[in-house]
Amino acid sequence: MSTLSLLISETEIATIVQTLAQRIDQDYCGESITAIAILKGSFIFCADLVRALKTPINRIEFISLASYGAQTKSSGQVMITNALAPNLIRGQNILVIEDIIDTGLSLSALWPQLQSQGPRSVKIVTLLDKPSRRQHAISVDYIGRSIADYFVVGYGLDFDQKYRQLPAIYGREP
Ligand code: XMP
Ligand code: MG
Image 1 (cartoon, protein in one colour):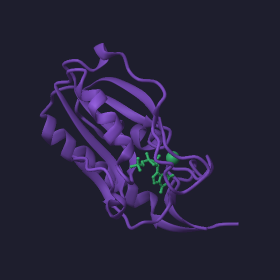
Image 2 (cartoon, rainbow, N blue to C red):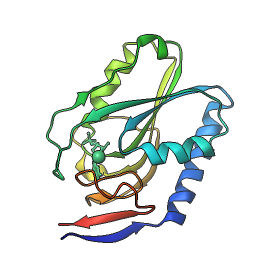
Image 3 (cartoon, rainbow, N blue to C red):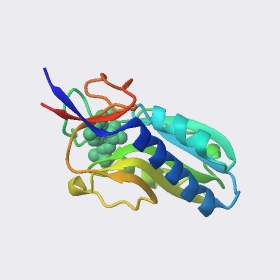
Image 4 (tube, rainbow, N blue to C red):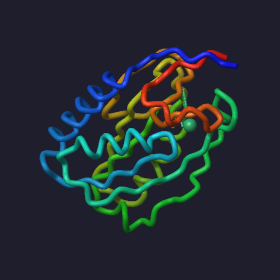
């Protein structure tokens, strides 16, 4: 049985989301965006972030990148299971919404795919970042909170598909 310890409370998450939304609104200056949320982990963050944004959103898409199984370390493989049609990307300001960046493998695999489809711009927002684990360099435009190398669950994040429903974020001790 694993232990969960509170890392980021509901109230702190709400403040982080509001701050991110304000920064994004300032940068886009009312230009519209296409949001691409990466499933499954970002589903709750995406829902909260889009409601906090004043920036007009043309379209919200969801893609799946799988690099984890029932383990807390990346398998080193990324599968993009449902790539978007190129016409959804071309000429658009793309905002990629991620729950957590760990090694950077997932986003570094996605990045060239998006760029090859002629977007107007691509920016990345992540709720959480684990900079000490980075192996693949990627430029992240908006980071909610940098954390140490904990495996975290809650607020959409899972361990073996469990705990996504928790409203706060917890470190999971094995
Ligand atoms: P990479 O290594 O590609 O990993 O940057 C990003 C994806 O890995 C998952 N991930 C986690 N999921 N708790 C989770 O529930 C964690 O602590 C964690 N660290 C990485 C997540 O799906 C993320 O999109
Ligand atoms: Mg996950």
